[in-house]
Image 1 (cartoon, rainbow, N blue to C red):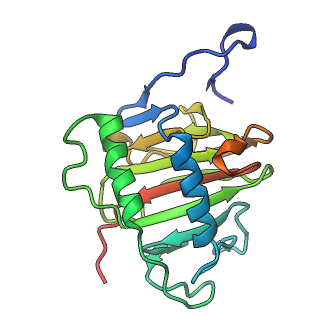
Image 2: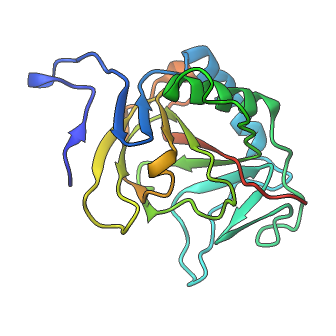
Length: 228
């Protein structure tokens, strides 16, 4: 495993966690989501998970089943395409993309890149992934979108090790970053199609004040560039 950017300093003492550019166009903003907004999102995620297309484990083309559970908003993702209806689940039309998430996405780009970064940004799809303590996400690229707009990633609950790699392969070089509840990670520009994954979750690190006692919620916002 590569070096991990950790919230713990020497001898385990906490250290200040600061905004960092992990790779060109890939920015980590620790503690960006206040606890009140985390609670709001946890409640919303519980509603979204009920459907009309419920949260489920995605079946891959080779028959494997992803260990994370996912619910989609705006567009339904299935390997490896977007649709408006969930033909691989129950055939229902996916829930609309919430205005709340569009506002968060635009604010996130400003936090990561500065004023003006959100001009013209119109996210229209969200993938909400729930990780229990045993869940993992293999190295992959987010490349089903026709837009090159940045991907916005929000973390709530248990800390995870987020592995951010290169655009050429799943192999090194990569960098491991600990994403803590409330953290923002944005990747765009030269890093938009970098391979990335979650090799492990750290159980018992969730913040109950956020409304999630265990497990990790990851909300990723994308601009698909698709039309009906």
